[in-house]
Structures are given as structure tokens and as C-alpha cells.
Image 1 (cartoon, rainbow, N blue to C red):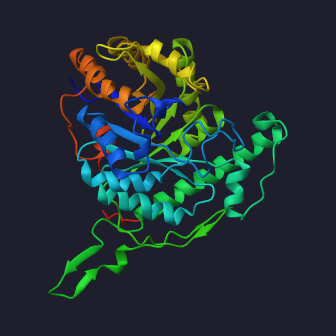
Image 2: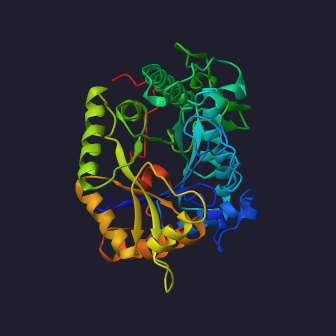
Length: 403
């Protein structure tokens, strides 16, 4: 089985799981949600299943049942650790799986993002990625006090809201561009480290980026040498045309939220149309379908029954993407069908992290492997290599030798 023929599989980690009542399950560890051991255990479980990557959710606001505002619920998980710092803590405890924390860019300086992700790539020895996220909520804006939020009377249906969000994605594209330039600001061989000649650094190979845009100007260079991957993987979550175009402009892979097979076809077509619209010159976007998964437990409760029971404990799960319930074999059928449509693979959101992730890592990957659709071992020591992205990324500031 060649790397291009197999499905790629990631897992999205968020608290106790994607169901709001997940923390109440007997297997869950609510008292450990803010401990490094909990997150290390989850990612190690995913790594034991040879998954390509684990993403870690994050936000600048507390979790909420409301799209744009905080709520007052006390029966669901509230609070989280910083995703980038979780990834940095987990990195030395893992060796094969890619780590993709979410980092919000709207109120975050691109220089700091660049340094943080570059440092993660060093800590993970070439397994770092980054899911870039915008911040459109008023309460998040108030945390920083550096800009005015327009306020939306009719939610995201308000034309002013759509214009504001489009502007945030334009800003996010500039952030990614600056981050990528800063990663390139050190050439790969800028560090000489020659004690005999008293030269640690070749200053001619460290470059200013001199970016000037609408939202910020950044001179550079970075304070962190070029990351091991050169360019760590950039990801985005997208549901519609504007974020599809952002992903096409700025990302290496995109997470999308299809429903049935017909919708999955149309989403893939929209992503490819976005690539054409922005005249993307890089490798085509790798498109991953997000699915929330409630799997039949070995010798135990069926996935559909688990979902119904959890829905009855408090708030019913409402998802932006398909909610799958069933066996590992049935999920493998669904994943194979997505691959046949042209998807690179899927990112699975465990309904209950401590119950569904072990089944994904053992049973689902095993079923895919029996069908010749999944790896038997990690074949690369970098995330770019796992995803089949070019291993060597040219540095934009390296002088091309004269012919």
C-alpha cells in the first residue's frame, strides 16, 4: 500500500469529549482535565493507533451554548488549558503522531505565534502543526480592549456581521503570511556553531521580513531559528466560501463539515473552486472531513444508545457536522466512501474521549488496515512526511546561486 493510496486519520481533542455531558461518564476523568497526564494519555492512545495527528481545541472565551455570547450553564465543562502549551507538554512524551494545537490569531501578534509554533516544532522534533482560528465574539474582544466589536443584532445573518467576519479572515491570511515569512527569516544553515573561529551565527543568513499590511507591520527576523520542518503544517476549519478561500490562500490542509455523501461531494467541489478563485499555486489542499463519533463499545453499549442516553442527561448534542453512531466496521465503511470521493481522510471528534478514542485507535484503524487503507507503522518522523507534503520547503530568502 503506497502512502498516496491510504486514508489519513486524525482526532480532535476537546475537554472530556464533544458531547456536553461527556464529563459525566464513568470512564471520564473530570478531575484531571487540567492536568498534563490526562492530555498525554489521550494523545498516546491516538499514537498507539498510528493516527496521523491530534488537534487540540482552544478559544479565547469560555465554552458556551451560544454562538456569539457567553452563557450561565454550570452543568457542562467550562474552562480549558492553552492548546499550544498542552502540545508542547505532550510532545516529549510522544514520538510519531503530529500535534496541531488551535491558536487564535485575531488578538494575537503573529510574531508570538511564529515563535510558539516554531518552538513546538523543535520540541516535537518536526511533528508540529497549527490550526489558525479567528475570533468574532464580543466577549473575546473585551478581553483585550484594543479594538471595537461592531455588535450583531441578527447574529451572523446580519450583513455587517458577514463583512466583519470576511475582514477577520483577511487579517488571518496576513497573520499566516507573516508567520511563514518569520519561519523563513533564518536560513537552514544560518547557525555555524564553530568554536574554533568564534562564529556561532552567519548574520548574512538571518533576514528581516519587512511586512507592512493593513493590520500590522513586522520587521523581523524571528528570534527562533527556522523550524525542523522549515514550514510546520498550517490547518484551518472551514464551513463556507469565505473560510474555504482563507484555507486555499493560507493552509496546507482544511477540516470541513459535510453531512451525507451528496453534501460531501459539493463541499469538496467548493473547496476546489476556492483554490481556483485565489489562484493557489501550492500543493492542492488536503481535505479532511470532520465527523463526531459515538462508537459501539466492545461487549457493551451501542453508539446510538450512548448518544441517546447522554442527550437525556442535559443538553442534546447539536453539531456543525455529521454525527456518526455505529460499529467500527460501519465507520470504516464511511471513511472508505469519503476516500473514494477524493477526501484525504477524516478528523474524528470522539463523543466521549475516554470511551470513543480507544475504539478509534484500536478497532477503526484495525478495520481500515485489514482493508489495505491504513498504515502498519509510522513511515515518517515529521508531520509533513506523514501527510505526504513536500519534505523540503524552499526558503524564500535563500539566494539562488548564479548559473
